[in-house]
Length: 97
Image (cartoon, rainbow, N blue to C red; front, side, top):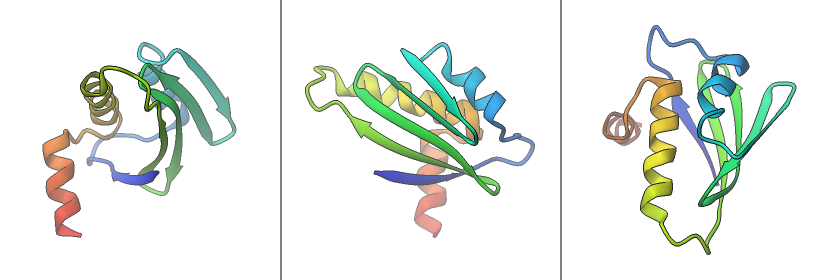
């Protein structure tokens, strides 16, 4: 499943910044040009791409992981650190579209 996330004014999107945010969270991290692939418990694969002034993220969940709430919390922390918007703000922005 893929999703686009807006980025708050004042936040800079770059492969380097995204890598820096992901390193403490991900079990593996692979950069390929303008794309970063990583994963952590509950998330088999996440692919991060920069699309203009938005972040595009494709995810593949691990359906056998026993603690999905922890995965969701971790994912929301990552997206907030990259975009500047917390889950509640992202939901509000998405409902306006």
